[in-house]
Length: 369
Image (cartoon, rainbow, N blue to C red; front, top):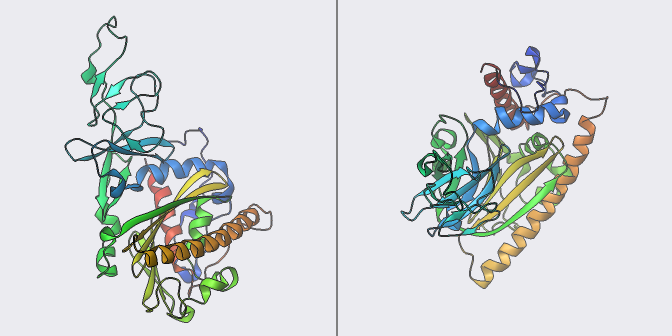
């Protein structure tokens, strides 16, 4: 059996891993949000085994364009080759572990920032300064270590799993559900990162239900038909559907619906007419996470579009700060001696239940290794 890197195995009781029907189910134990052992377990059992959204095709259009990311604590680089192919590697030089890139950018070669070892864009080692006296050394044995890569609608994903299932397995049906909108035709506008003082699962739980909206987001509450809000559950994701009222709506003046997708474990796709907002939730500590927001629109150039984008992002920023504040308070409450487990609202928390069931499944799979 594999173990978290820190060597400590968090307590996983069989009763806690059991998946009961929604109407009788309890929420996951508070220790799963607060115990440092679960931070390590999530890295190995969840993030190292799943597809992770790390970049966008728009920022990797030219040969040499590259983007860096952190996946399950591992440094990753995605680069466009001279042959036009996208590839992903560990952002780790084969000499002594130095970084090939420390920020997104463009380069003809990937040059280690520690000792100058030089790699081609396809990962093959080309240059090794001051190595002429080294014996039994073949550059062909020291290429960069590759990582699985897949692209969907202009979004770039990587997986550290040895044999990951096809990415489409996890996103099946989304493209058809949002039609005639096409995510891949939208244009990138902005990225904003938020540091949230809560475990990543607290943030995801909060995203997955509209139960809290009237109490935490009064402005958002006024933009859609709360009574018409429903949650649809699929194999690897759920989608919350909120009919938009169209009354002074920052999203759209013509009504329609907002589709809030949560793809296990940590990707959100918020789709409204003419706009996509993606969120990626990255654990940074047992009680901390980073949330990366990316915004895409059908029109990013006209003056009217820029005004709408600024208004949309300003509104989203207010909602995000409201979420961050309540998540921080929830994290504190989960650490209280007064709390261990709760219950689910069948009407509003099916998405939370579904996410926690997938989490239990991931833990059980890890235990069987």
